[in-house]
Length: 75
Image 1 (cartoon, rainbow, N blue to C red):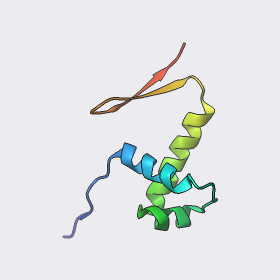
Image 2 (cartoon, one colour):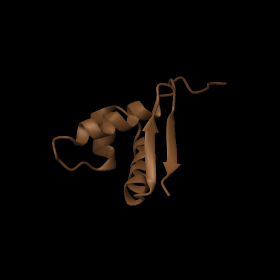
Image 3 (cartoon, one colour):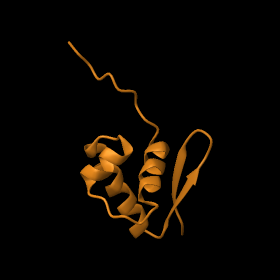
């Protein structure tokens, strides 16, 4: 039985790659962004949804530590 051969990517690295590709201001479709970054289009779609949600919710604070990402709701 064959399993997944790809290594699991760091979520922060995925988000950084997405933002790096978008820096020039050019619009991308999900498939174009997948080709540009080398990340599967399903993964791109998942992270774009996460980015959209976090950007809409001003009460969520994202804290990046050395070993993890912490989300906290500001009150």
